[in-house]
Image (cartoon, rainbow, N blue to C red; front, side, top):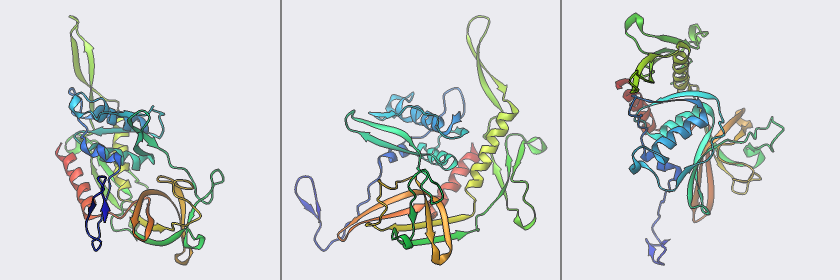
Length: 326
């Protein structure tokens, strides 16, 4: 039975209830990335952390339309972590864009509660390297042999694998700008992918003032190297969705020598080992499920990527279709 705050109970002793709670960060599924009024897309280049905080600020913390603001949501100072990236978004779901940037950069993100200040704080999280071969942090090895892993599932697939991409930008016919990535592969080892990136702009709006002192705006050509950088980023993002698919899931022993949130946490990179299968992999912990049952608490984790569901694959295709129609 489930006890409510008013002291009443729901359900019967013979009933089983499944209760799932969403993390606070799921708030950002409620916002789209709206482009500025003077341009078709919200384009942002900078460190991965800077870009993520830019989109959150413009669409959830300090949006033009005050009705889109989440009360008490603030952004932690920008430490400019991660590699330099270039992103272009238009009516994309804010949380999905942040996830895409996380996959590219290896940076995580979260919203935490600061009770003292009565605030929800958006910030970037950097996982700790705890693999067996490093000597800076105490290593964490998830393995039945180390009594730290009760069970493990492992899936390896090449069904969706691509390692070379033709990335096409704007233009028509033979005039269309096309770059290639991974062109050093050949023969049976070459798996080709076409990436439609026609939304990568060839021009940008430049503000100015005319002779009478009036503000003006005109489209001017972008630097070729900037365009190529954007096309390269888009191609690498798509190739990252088609790498050799390795999915690992496991159930961490509750009484393991490695304690959750003390010895390891979400986002950390650990070593996964199953000697009977001949598997030793260093992978990031990308999902943690805390499950509370009558028999006690158990923790399930996913390493690097969880297995795609039909819904997640459908969302990926619909997102690409939306970009193609823009």
